[in-house]
Image (cartoon, rainbow, N blue to C red; front, side, top):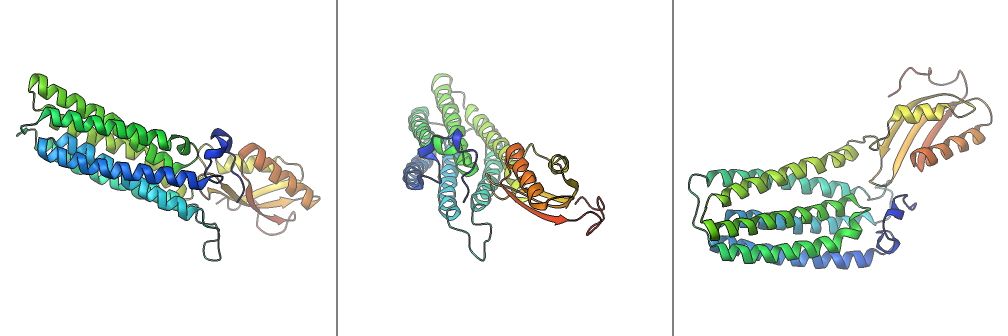
Length: 306
């Protein structure tokens, strides 16, 4: 597998192609802690009567689940390519991220409905229990975020899990604030208000993050690169008369691929080497499949730039 060009952004020893085992151990630790925390928060939410604490718990559960999926996807993505999966298993991480965000959306809509229902009948809430448990949650979120931070720089999948944690830390702070307001002012409406705010926040967050994931699954061009720009650049290479049938997509988060028909006048191998060099340098595309045509042969140039 070619070493991807993003790796310099991460510290070498955290890069997931180099030291996967250490990464796996960290993720396993993060999963265990988040699952324990979810149980504690749900029990605390039920005892204290706080829906916002349960909302935070569900957010934490989504964290743990996202880490489990991300963990499994990482393992799967490292499998070598074979006859059935000729591109390898790298996209497992993209599919995992997609599943994660969709479940988050469903959960946040449910929480929103629950929060709104409580506006008319805000429950009695034990402020201290809420504050203590949300405080523990905040500490765990920050530890998990610290564990996954270095790995999140070069994996869309781990980044999803890392951002969940950061979002969780924010919701825990909100819940602590709500507990304090209930203790000081006995203003019970703060709990459903926070529940609704947290749910909308989770929904917005998932909505923004799912877009690049869908783009990869829909075989979209890499963000910031367009097929027509790539075609135009290839057409400028000396000896290239025309470029058509250009397809540009991402195999996974780090590897882009281009496929095109190139009309070459001159020394084919020299021109192709220049085209491939240009693709690598200007667009960071290391995988290209080019079909060579002689002038006047094959497709009618420009008839289809699909």
